[in-house]
Each structure stands twice: as structure tokens, then as C-alpha cells.
Image (tube, rainbow, N blue to C red; front, side):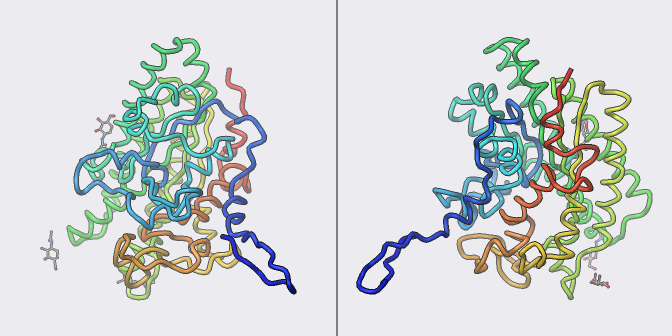
Length: 379
Ligand SMILES: *[C@@H]1O[C@H](CO)[C@@H](O)[C@H](O)[C@H]1NC(C)=O
Ligand SMILES: *[C@@H]1O[C@H](CO)[C@@H](O)[C@H](O)[C@H]1NC(C)=O
Ligand SMILES: *[C@@H]1O[C@H](CO)[C@@H](O)[C@H](O)[C@H]1NC(C)=O
């Protein structure tokens, strides 16, 4: 923004510093990247446009305003479920890249898959995907399919640059995975539709299938050459505006949060056991989205947020009774909202989370931070 400001008789051109606020979010790119490439798997917290290429009217797509309104330069929707960058972008930036690697389906369409795959990485993340193939089936690229797409990418990479180079590249690269929230939403919805609360047996069976399929995903990535895997656990899904609005007082659904928290504990143990017993040479970090988000929701003002319960872009109570569309209401200060829409974090909340996982207090990553993981030397 530019404007003229009167100073005595002189008119002085004043350059507004509004742009500086977003620039400050981005680390300077003085250092070479910590890893050669980043490969991304998971759901809408990481999707950078894959779903824009999927057919079907029920596919979740962030392809309309006001999505992307704060993206530098364009301010246009890109498929990110955010007002600006998302968690994948901020993790990639911390690792020394400009933003997340591009979406697999976009790279395919532009015939840029292999050049990107061998120099920066690829994002297979798809909004709506869960750990289970059955979650929102038919309207996303399920996690298991994302891994198969990576397998076929790898074969093409090998044809282009050779097996040896690909093995070296992949073993030094960062594999970012975030999934599970959609499985919990689907589980809660299924219980509600059956008019019942989950029994201990339901929960045991649900955790069992999540853990077995997540372990299978990580094992598959390892077999394909991944040695540095950063996993973001499931956040307090009972606190998103879309769930809060179901409660008359706008309270979080404590039962759903406990369900997610219980899974996160089991996930941490399962990944540790996998690395110790079955996948020699696997280095990993589990990022505590649950703990970090709970801490933010407990002290929003301390982190500069004015709202921790409502969607910035939406409509009705808590901004959660309507989607974020061009007809929605937009909050005045997007950086002061934890939630951008009724499910997803704002750009600023995503940035703070990624910072915590990369180089934040030790309590938010286990057993090492994303930064330590990136810098490890792999056999
Ligand atoms: C779990 O993983 C197996 C093996 O990859 C897959 O065949 C199955 O469909 C998955 N189950 C669900 C419910 O996603
Ligand atoms: C659940 O309850 C609603 C309203 O009470 C009813 O219409 C519906 O048929 C019930 N569903 C099942 C699966 O029992
Ligand atoms: C709403 O939340 C409050 C506080 O957690 C809880 O006591 C109450 O049972 C909830 N109401 C419903 C309908 O779930």
C-alpha cells in the first residue's frame, strides 16, 4: 500500500509496512536447505492443491476466495485450507525451502513431476484423507494410495537419475506425515448416527486399525527409502469450531479430545517400537500437535490471539454454521484467530505450530525436534 502524507509543505511518499508483517513470518533463505527434498503425505493440514485435480462434487477443495487471501503476491486460492501458507509450507520453509513442494497432481499436469521430485520433493497430501482408506472414501487420495503414488514416482526418478542417486537422495530427505483427524471425525459421526456412545470395545478396535494402518504406511515409506520421518499427531479435534458449535455453550467435546489424546499416546509408543525393533536406521520425530494446540487454546492472548473458538471465515454462530466461501463473513484481523475456517488453523496458528515442531520447546517433539531430525547423518 502506498499513500501520501503531508509533512509541513512537503508531500512524503509513505510505504506502508503491512507487507512486512507477512514477510516476517518467513525465515530468510540465506542457508542451504537442511535436507535435499521434502515428501509430504496426509490430509488438509498439508494439502497444497491435489484435491483441485480430483473429480467429484463432494471432494473438499479450497479453490475459492477467501482461501489464500494472505498468500504473498497473488492472494488467490491454491487449494490450501488456510488464509495463507499451511503447516507443510512452514515446515518446508524452516528446512530452507521457499514453501511446500508442489502437489503431485499439479506436477503431473504440468509435466514437472520428476524435475521437482529430484530437487525439492513432492506433496501427495489430500484434504479429507484419513489413516484409514474407509475415511471419506471416494473423495480424496487415501494415505495408502499416496504411498503408492510415491512408489511410482520413485520408479520414474530411478529411470531418470539412477537407483544409487535416488537411494542417497531419499535417505537424506524429510518425509512429513500428518493424518488422523478425519478418522476421528468419521468415528464420532458414525457413533452419532447410531445414536450411541463408543464402548471400550469400539475404541480398542478403532485404535487397533489406526495403529496397524499407520504402522504399515511408515513401514512402506521406509522400504521405499525414507529414513527421516516427521509425524504430526492428532490435535484436539473436539475443539474445532465445527464441533464446538454442536454444544449449546460452545464448549470443546471433551470425549472426542480424550479419544484423540489416547490415540496419540499409543501412536508414540507404536512408532518408537517400530523404529527400535523393525526398521533399523529409521530416524523419526513425532510432533505434538495435540499438546501444542491445547496450550494455545489455554492461553490464546499470550500468543497474540483474540479468538480461539471461532472461524475467521464462515457464518453463523462461532463462524461454524457455514463454509468459508465468497459469501462468508471474514474477521477483521486474521492473524488474531486460531481458526481460519471451522476446521483448519489460520496461517499464523500453522506457523506457530511448525515453529514449535521444528525448533520449539522439547516437550512438543519426541524423541528429537524436526530440526535435529533434518540434521541427522544417516548411515
Ligand atoms: C489398512 O491397510 C491395508 C494394507 O495396506 C489396506 O488394504 C486396508 O484397506 C487398510 N484398511 C483401511 C480401513 O484403511
Ligand atoms: C437415531 O435417532 C434419531 C432421532 O431420535 C432417529 O431418527 C434415527 O432413526 C436413529 N438412528 C438409529 C440408527 O437408530
Ligand atoms: C456442552 O459442554 C458442557 C461443558 O463441557 C457439557 O457439560 C455439556 O454436557 C455439553 N452439552 C452437550 C449437549 O454435549
